[in-house]
Image 1 (cartoon, one colour):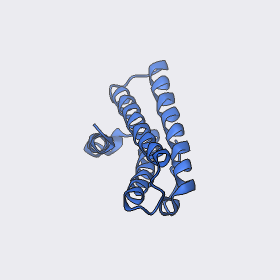
Image 2 (cartoon, helix red, strand yellow):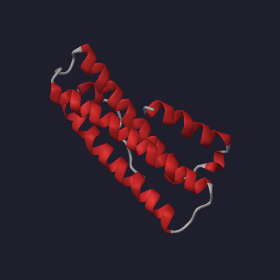
Image 3 (cartoon, rainbow, N blue to C red):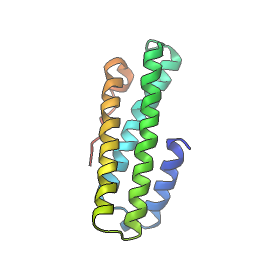
Image 4 (cartoon, rainbow, N blue to C red):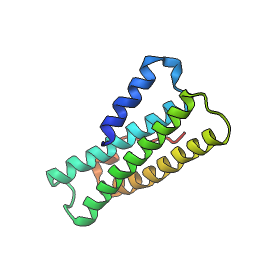
Length: 128
């Protein structure tokens, strides 16, 4: 399942009970949303030919999409633990996993912005 499916699942979790999402989860979700806009813009620009259509650029965009999936999976796991009222090291480990995945994704998004002027106009993701 690509990132869109995870967004739908996460939104469902959060909208069912506004208090069901922590500040960390909201910030992480906002970072995912911001990065998705940048990656989607790069994909559109690549397909339109407004950025070079090289194998290297295509690989960066695909790597970003995979990193989004990883970050979304991590956030989903964290949310499940938080919803189950898990505390202690398992929750800390899950949160650290989300932060690591988002940090990786942010670096890839920064790389995309170096070659895509359309993506440069979009806001950078803010990490939790």
